[in-house]
Length: 355
Image (spheres, helix red, strand yellow):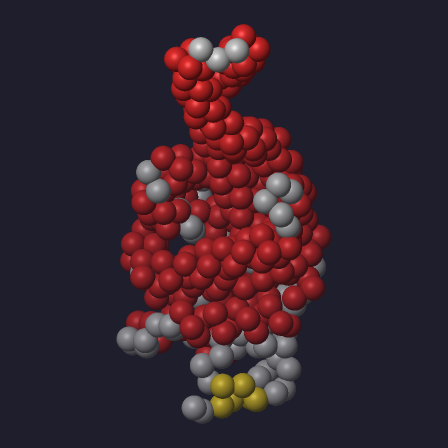
């Protein structure tokens, strides 16, 4: 593969490199992608985009992690508290149900005592033996009645456990989607800044995001509610909606769209290149799943807060990589679809600064 000297750092990179691995600035070849798209230049594959995202992450790992942590860490603490408060009672109820199952042997003991008492009557056993068996019978009947009431309460509690579990899942999914959406917006600004030769730190990135925080929160919360309900109750529709709304933060921050227009724009971009978007979203989901697996290894099931927080912190370490890939994919789709150039990106950032 041909190589070319980098005008930003002076080193030689592969010709297919879109962003300088050291500075994060766009390569000259990337700045002319709009003309290449018009002439039929093939689009970048998901693997190539992830490589570019990884290079950006390696170069700016500290700044990117801090940018994510500004919202990710406090949101994770809130989410973990909600998980412990909502789902904690279900663990206690589950333990009670397990104890109740152990007590199911009372019925067998009652039947054995009844048979022994009947045989004692038939054999004309002594008074003491019969009174002892009668006392045992009364005690077992009392215990069985008490356990039957507990079982009935547990049966009613199972519905409560289901409701709590459902509500807890909704809360967790909602908080995660809102956190991911806003954080994705911050990383979008960071990538756009690096792509146009900037060097904004996490403070500058979040200050720019705050200029359109209102429209972004409205769009992200609407998206989170719709996707969370779809994911919890219907699963497949929730996944499809998550796919279609994945570019909502970029539509708000980069293109200045609001409300329905941001949703329509995201749907249009995704449907024009749904396969690459689906693969990138799958990579993000796999990362989150692996982080939760690691958390389960080090935290017991009863430690809901610790397990949830540890899983989120594990996710935070590599969370920027697939999100950076999604942002780069957004820019790549726009270059292919509407001739988006770095000059237009600079103009969009300037518009964001003056909002």
